[in-house]
Image (cartoon, rainbow, N blue to C red; front, top):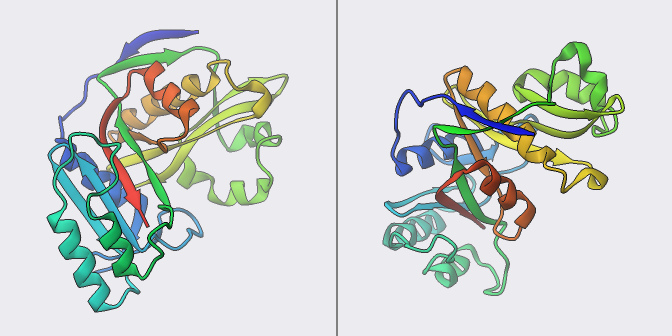
Length: 245
């Protein structure tokens, strides 16, 4: 069950400010501002090109190992991309971006989806459990490598779960974070989906993140309707969209 409550933001960043914060949380950057890897323990390589969009404008990043020629082309194309009223639309320059990267024009994006912020107040749950080092064994059914989870636990905090019959069945944690913001990572065992558990753990996680003075953020893909349902249930606010190749 969810009970509506919440806290007030200490500041009201613009959508472009939020997008900047979001990008800093998503990727590890080098001294030139180019992206190197996903901002996770043992993170995968960053996408070659990332475009973040809001109604007020766009921000972009290129990967550190691209040729200077490709970087110039990508940055010129990104700079020409207009702000979009419909954030579901792919970049206007999509074909040219593919050509700059040497891709087949039919290649699918690596990621395309909405980015949400939390309102001043949202439904907060009962029946959730804070996961700490003392009760990590509750995650055993959901985590294939519990020792790795122990090793990286601090970078995943805060962690909240719904526990049924002594085991976690739904989980929200910080998938990526900086000193300013944290991004939600959510998992629910298949047999427990559709019970409202994901919304409950996300709500608890976001409250805990905000209590630290950081900004909780939530992202998904356009075709993940269940994840977007969580956003609707919590009243999350669409502020941007991510696109990467």
